[in-house]
Image (cartoon, rainbow, N blue to C red; front, top):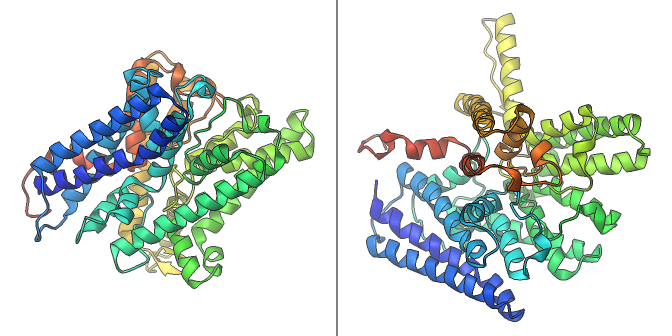
Length: 486
């Protein structure tokens, strides 16, 4: 592995992290938040120090080229570095201890959105905007945004994109990697601006609109108020949030293609159409269940059901009411949607609908082969044949996620948390949702978790965001051995 090249590119990432702290620093200076100014100045200084040390050790030469191992190392180590540097404003400003600061940072960048703050309304605007920025930067991907703004990766950059991208396929829509990253970033920015303007027109002030737009499009879910969305008393805002959460659950690569070829591309996308059907069916069942089992009228039941199915399936985690008090059937459907997640290539977490579609198609192929042993049946998606490796990859990932969910649940049970709460927190963490049921209920976060569970929560949030195998590859002993096969 070319450690010199890895070090140099990590140095660019830490510099990018320091630059991302300029907006909250401006907010702190404008509001005369002395503590906030010093906290962000210290954070930026440490980012620059890290950049200096990494660049002193590393360097980029003309013939350097990224390989698989370099791509994995830059992605995983880069995410860890950014999370460590991103926690400094929370700790330096005195609002959180060291462990909670790291948990908040990881939760933000990974898009999980479960906070350890018990009262976010006491936080200054500089900290609030930093929390939202961490959601936004981590949503599309630190590497993707970095490559769109400062393309320094050169040839072999596809390995880095593949290491960070989510979903069973890692397709690109343009021949050049930089153009592809730039197109994704521009769509991301455009949707954020449109979402901000919509929220502003719905009645939020500009600061609240921008913050909530960033965390909506990133499907992170960090908010700037303690109360639920229902406390805003704005039905139009809830409708707008529902729409943009669903939009953010679609593949951003699909939107790039749709922008170039027409909106009909969206309606022909098997995964996105399937996702919308899942949302519609789940919202319908929850609506009927709430109407029958509670004192809600049909309109209120439909309003809350649609909002929360969109919120949890997109893994955004916004809350309009305490769904932890809902009937068991409704809670079961909500947990199912949060486990499934959104589409591959979106900012949503979860298993991804593409994998579910592939697994069902694979089961159908197996059944058909049992009935007709001599037939040659292959999996198709979007009218195209899907490579067997991609299908088996979906099965491997499903197995890995189930195993990780079980392991994290066992860790929390060892830490003193009961079975139901352990399973709930595990599913919501691995799905990058944030809110869940029980100890991490709709209006709760990670603040009630014991210290050991918080540490493991950070580990599993990393595993979930980088989709397990990239992280496991880095910690594998064979990864560091010299081999011509890399």
